[in-house]
Image 1 (cartoon, rainbow, N blue to C red):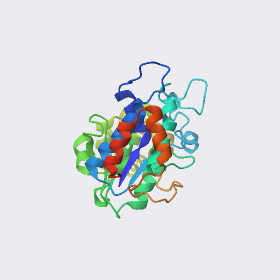
Image 2 (image 1 turned 120 degrees about the vertical axis):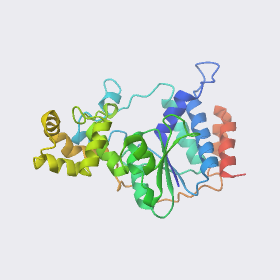
Image 3 (image 1 turned 90 degrees about the horizontal axis):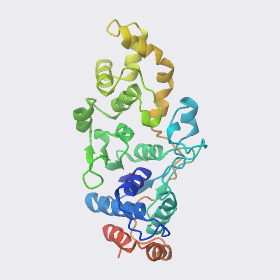
Image 4 (image 1 turned 120 degrees about the horizontal axis):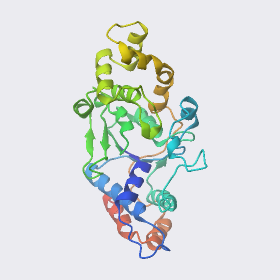
Length: 304
C-alpha cells in the first residue's frame, strides 16, 4: 500500500516543477503536473496494490491548538486564525488536483478535524500486518510510523524526491537519529520540539541529547519518571529545564503523535483498474494542457 501525504507532495511539486505558462493570465498547472508525475513515478517504482491520497481536512486541528496554542501559528495567513498561508499560484491548483484524483479513481481520504498525518496514522493502524505499507512524505514527523515488524516504511522525499527517497526503516532511524524505532523517534521529537510547527521543546535539548536521554531511560515516560523520582544523574541546568517544561511535556505527546483512530471512511483503496470519470479527465487534459502527465499515470496504473 502507498499512502501519499498529498499536501507535502503538491507543495514540493509547486516549488520544483517549472511554470510553463506564456502569460500570467493562463491558469497555473505546475503543481498539478508535478503531482501527477509523482504518482506515475511511485506506482511504476513500487507497484502497489493499494493507493490513497491522504488529505488535510483540517491542517491545524483545534484539539492540537487547545493543547499548544502556538501550534502552526506562523503558517497562518496574516489577519486570519484559520487559513494557511499558501502561494497565490498554488491555491487555484488544489481543486484541480482533487478533480484529477476523482477522475482517475484514486481514493482521496481526509477526516473532519484531522490532518493528513492522522489519516495516514489511522490507515496504518487499520491495515498494518495485512500488507506492507509505504508512507510517502517530505515531513519528518511521519518517521514515527516506521515499524519493521509490521512492514511499515516511510519513503522520505526531503532530498531525493520521489525518485530517490530515503527509505525509512528502523535501521535508518538508528543510523540517522540514534533511536531504535518510530515510538522513540516521536519521544525524541517531543523533547527537541519543532519551530516549524510552533512546538517549543525542552530548552537546551536538541536531537543528539534527546536521543541520548531516550536511550538511557527507554522512553519519554521513563525519563519523566526519573526526573520526578530525583534521579541524581539528571542534574543542573538539564534538570531545571526538564522541570520547567513539565506542562509542555504533559500535552505534547497528544500534539506530536499522529492519531490512530481518526474517522477515516472505510472505502475500497485498491489500485483503480479503470478511469472513474472519463469526461472530467478529458476536460482536465484539454482545458489545462496536462494530457501527458495524465497519460503517464494511466500507463503506470495499466489503464488502457
